[in-house]
Length: 113
Length: 113
Image 1: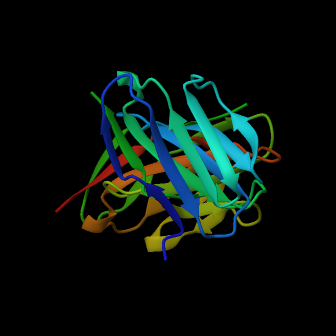
Image 2: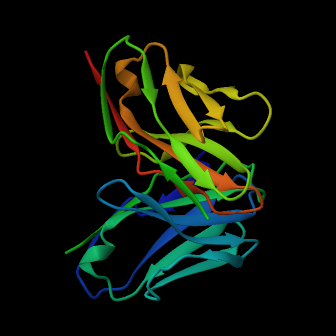
């Protein structure tokens, strides 16, 4: 069984469109994250939710909006897509507490044309 | 604030040779340290982590790392590498009491047959 899953795996879209990426974890964790990995492999946190409450919100354009319907799901909506949004987006989850390991999903490769 | 520096962006190593991937960190508080591996077109997988106790930490796939507080380092080592170790390796730091995991820029390990 997949621990952290993301859909879709690949997403190709035109500039200006709105798209969503979905993430689900079946590990029973209470904290979920979105990371962005750019073309140089640099990995940066975007958001984190704990028990459906936003706890980390890095400097991210407000075109990006996370939504957590329950502890097991964290979706990422992106409005008015721009070329610079092209990247691989990773979802992760952990049990709250700094010692806990974050488990990553397989990633969603977003290409904006 | 916390940060991670991975000094080598690429490390080529002959098969069966030893390897060391360097990682230095800075933080105003005590830290937890992690090494993750990313195989091509996959998500990140935890190799090992240092939380407390013994400064030599053993992980999966024959990797180990040593926490050196005075040098603020957490270098990753393997005595004999295999072709299957070809991947991107990320060092990460998390301050105690902080939910945010900060990643280094990654080191691409290439194994030469």
